[in-house]
Image (cartoon, rainbow, N blue to C red):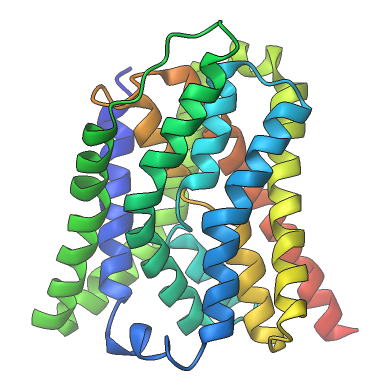
Length: 286
């Protein structure tokens, strides 16, 4: 099965859907939410990669999984985070703004972080993994920025049709991501089972530590409850589809095993966030 032919279209559709969500309101709130934006972007662009490095070292991940986990942490929050923010009674406008800004900023942050990571694991003397930085930047432009721009233009030129398309895509996005994770899981089931303890522990540490960082940062800046919930979700929920696309792309790493942390992350992340929503609902009814 050529998984590249599955993951790349899914990523393009997800970014197109995100583009449809963007309008002036998504960015007009930037000046009104400086603290929340600072917290969210700092958490995503700085804190997450640091946590991923720490978790990968703590649980002794092999180089290919080390890079896969760091790659997940480098990718921006996906469009599904906006849905989870809505379900959590969070600040959806803030969620959309953070997702859009992080998607743009990570075009420039992913290459240097991953280049550093590949040089770091090369010190183990066990890997010959190389990163073509220019191709990575080009692929991110083609598969993330351009579909997002196309979605925004579609909304501007055909607002009624865009709303209908968005409604359809928003219902398909989560099942598509889970289908992708399930296909990869089946394909690499033996490898995942062999490393499930270290991979599951490192991935779980990344998710919980990221969400805890979101809680602590948002409390330090005394953000309102709705914003705190959005920050927790945005920092805790990364774009696994993009991480998988970079890992398996013939232009970049061309390594299916590197996508395994993204698969484990996608499965665990959604379970954790669903549990988080249940906890919030119980708090509201208590």
